[in-house]
Structure formats: C-alpha cells, structure tokens
Amino acid sequence: RSRCGGGNRAPVSAEVWEDRYGAIAEDPVKGGGGVSEDEKSKRSADRIAISRCGTNQCKVVSRVRNTCQAIAYGEGLRFFGDGASEQLAANDAIAKCEQKGTKCELKYTGCSLPVRVK
Image (spheres, helix red, strand yellow):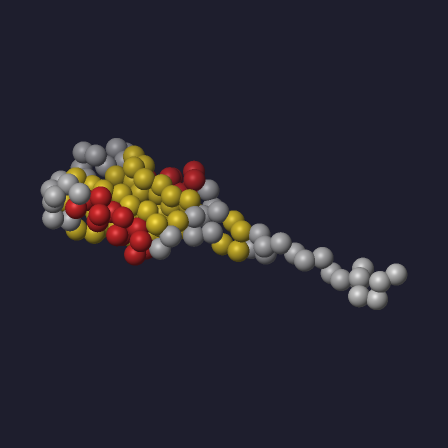
C-alpha cells in the first residue's frame, strides 16, 4: 500500500456555468428598438427585446450567447459588433461601420456573459 495519502480525498468538483443570452430588436418601419441582456434562454432574450421595442413590427436583428454586442450607426446604416467585453464589441461595430467610409456613432453596448452556478 502507498503511504501517499490516497483514497480519502473528496472528489474535485467541476465548475458549472449557465449560458446567458442577449438580443436586439428593431422596428424597420418606425425605427424603434429594444434590447435584452443576461437572459437564461434565447427565447426569453428575443421575447423581452421585442416587448421593449414597443411595436408589433419589431423583429430580432441581433442576438448573442455568452458574449457582448454593440450597434454603431452611420449614414442611415447599422453595424453590429461582438466581443468578449463591451469595449471589444464597440470596437468591432465601429470598425465595421468605418469600413464604409462613414462617420459612425456608437448607440448601444451590452453583455450577456455566462454565470457560474457551481
């Protein structure tokens, strides 16, 4: 038998993480919008973003799981970005917008990051 202290150790518990979802909804006719963050399901994220948008014409135009997202607007166009942080998502959206050679304005950033439950 080994004298190295075998056998009586408690098993190492693995970390458990839950996904989180976010969505952006927009009304293509009236131009309104709504967002959701940190929802436990894609369905819930979509439903909340649409309800916050405020009209029956709203549609989900972007969604994320376990990451951040951003929207930049320039000359009537919208550009979506994503990344591991709000800053990275914003940089991505602005970079995509600036590729079109337009002046860009960041309108939204938000994160839906996984949550450790164990």
